[in-house]
Amino acid sequence: MHFPITRLVLALTMVLGFVLVVQLALQAALIAAGENQNPYLKALGACIVAACACLSYAAYVRLIEWRPVTELSRPRAVREFLSGVLLGAGLISTTVGILALLGRYRVSGFNAPLVLIAPFCLGLLSGFLEEIVARAILFRIVEEWLGSWLALILSASLFGLAHAGNPGATLGSCLAIALEAGILLAAAFMLTRRLWLPAGTHAAWNFSQSGMFGIATSGNKAEGLLRAEITGPDWLTGGAFGAESSPIAVLVCTAAGAVLLILAIRRGRVVPPIWRRKRSLSVTAGAAPIGQVT
Image (cartoon, rainbow, N blue to C red; front, side, top):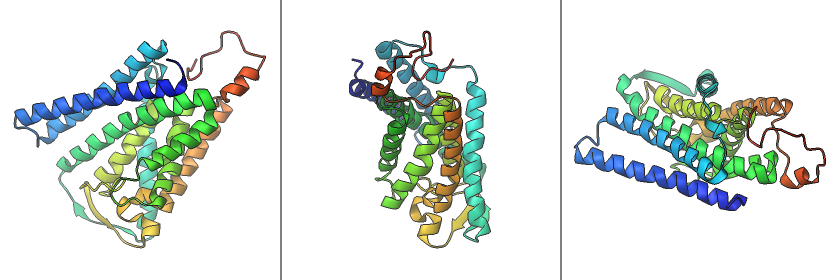
């Protein structure tokens, strides 16, 4: 039950299975009520699904790993989530700002605030569901087994490949996601050992990109508050996949990820692989378990 691969399968099954059931139930309820196009109810549904993802993950940790759910602990939760929101919004704003300075991003008008609801749903779901799957489950469990660096490489690579089926995806866009998001979000999790910072960063990045700047998020087009267009060569602007496939975004976000990694190293948050831990004869009595912050 506690072998890493077994835990990966159990965790993914419990979380994704429960979320799928909840999504289908909510969709059926909206259709039955004739409100399946109501944007406000869709936003409420997104909040419910995100909450259910957290609850199912907490249930997995309690039932299978028999420990407190430190990844979702409440102390500093609001501060870390808001810090992530500022970080994610700041990174995409920097990227778009550079594109604007280069004459590649131009604003032609504004849309009604109602267009923010769809990007809000997308940002909230991706911020929590994808971070639970990619960081709290995949990265964390692999890290306990293979150590932080191999877990970082593996989770970042798989996170990039997970976007291969998105509209406009290319090998370059998958590599960009792996570098900019895979490293940045894993480093945010390593630094705090909680989900709030990476979830806030991920949610704000997606919401700001589509909702504020009107740019496709991972190939998924959505109207934003700003009516804008990006012109120029795909290698510079990211093409149909969006600005996050631009080398500008890669440089900006990877640099931010490197800073978080340095902070994590300085705070002793790097986990060695299990074979090195087993060879160590100097185990400190009463030390915090792997992944738990004291």
